[in-house]
Length: 508
Ligand code: SAH
Image (cartoon, rainbow, N blue to C red):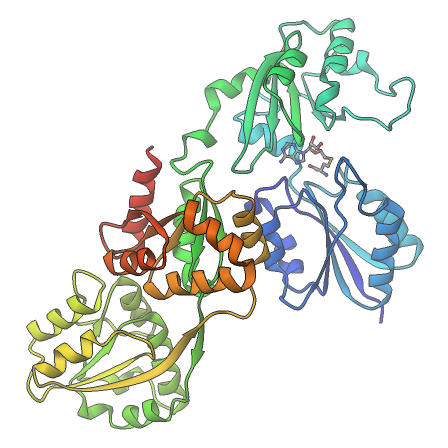
């Protein structure tokens, strides 16, 4: 059976601007064909096993000619694959998506177009410029500033363009002088506001303001680089009053979050809400251990006075074992339940259990102290399902007081097999401003992951230059011992406190 090719708009560079439909088809792609402009983070949405084919064109050299790309899409489709052709912005706006669609139709390959957020509209929006505005501009034209090379006379009707309220030019920032000259020649005033938005929607967005008369000079002195869009029209002046991205506390910062992918979502969401570009580098994979011992303990659950949980993973595995054995949360009736911190307590709540005890600080020492205070002591039976490599302090403290602690290793944390290439690339390119560490094991795994996948040279550079944000003193110690530079330490051992500390570090 023939496959299907999805021509998907990847948006202008900010990964959050992909459409839901785009994410959905990416998640089941067998082949992803992508360019340079697409946000690299998007590739992580495709299954690990998907083939990723880079066909990006650099201004210097063409990696693949357009007809080669067309042929590639046709042959992947013919081979019966689900193909996602990720294209910057919208596939049908200066994206040559039309040519690709025509080639597919001619070859009889089914396709679907998933529109994207085009740079010419998203760029102005991120610069606080509404491309239409009541009483200011009621029409917008999207225009290429870079026509086919070698063309003697421009096809563009500058007389018509000069009469349109807002004109957005894609490509060709170098040609801005010629464009401005023609518009002025056709009667557009030299004072007409112009905004040039470079790397719009990314952490390195920059807006250069000018007028038609000064635009070429401003592009030169400010050394504006592609990709950039140029907005010409009165609306461009609104950008000064409506600028908003720069006001976000973490705007312009790239933060790498190191955790298991499952656990990182809260931290990632909160950092993104503050305007940061957030990359993920899962450094921990959870490997469940044989659960016979836990199953045995669950059968005798009634004999325990307390159940103590020191991670959300342990909670999940405990309940999985419980339900696999044909039981449910009622088996916990009469037991008291302790959670080390808010995330663990929240996971318990998802399973219908409200923790009886949660220490002020989410560390083993505090949990031990809180349990002792709650009456755990001589002869108290405590069930503690936990990670194989957990620290001994909790068990030792309770045992010293005569408690009978049954400690069961239910999972191990391991370094994941695959590494997120986009994150590794950003580290190599020196784009990362801060790396979050939320446990000693994330710090250790981060170092071994970089060493094995990134090489010694990258590791040395990371040790010398990169800044780390740690969730607390124990994690900081481990990181420092590993040679990492802890620039900030959270006041409290929780995700919101870590986020608040990072926000203060950013100084806004
Ligand atoms: N199909 C794309 C446009 C591709 S043409 C879209 O719909 O957005 C490439 C041009 O798009 C660049 O030369 C630049 O003018 C513009 N562009 C793409 N990404 C951009 C970005 N992040 N910031 C500013 N301009 C961008």
